[in-house]
Length: 203
Ligand code: MD3
Ligand code: FE
Image (cartoon, rainbow, N blue to C red; front, side, top):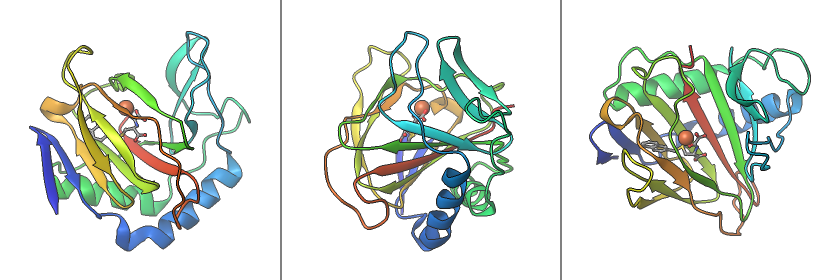
């Protein structure tokens, strides 16, 4: 079912569940080619979530800044192609949330192990903010922090579980958001981890 968090922001509970076998195989295939790594922020901090990408463009950070690149800086090769199951899940979820014509060119894959978190931030490295963003939660549950238009706005805490898909755009596109430190546990899909797919139109 569909839960509205705010104007333009929705959670489709369990929307990815009927594709979990194909999703697991696709994640395996991408991460074998271009493994998870802990990136460094411009401020010199190691990100606690491990990341990799697929699609034409991949989000990266290092001492020089946040940006999208065509090549994996670790291997010097293009990011692997976006698996069809990712693209189809994203466009279907966007449509179900009321955003037609979503065509993602970038998929960031985040892996959270116990204690990993993501501080409050806005997603603003994309060329235009007209396209929505689709996020797929897999494995261990997490607490999503849904803030406001200013960093100081106190975030709402929203549980995200295996199979949940969040879609946000329009008035919610630049809302501050983050993930609270992951609690230890085990889940049949991903073991002692949470995996998040964030699908975006970067260019
Ligand atoms: C934002 N990832 O990679 S996406 C990111 O779960 C990122 O790994 C988080 O933020 C993660 O940039 C959160 C989940 C999400 C869900 C609903 C939202 C982000 C949202 C609604 C509005 C704004
Ligand atoms: Fe984000």
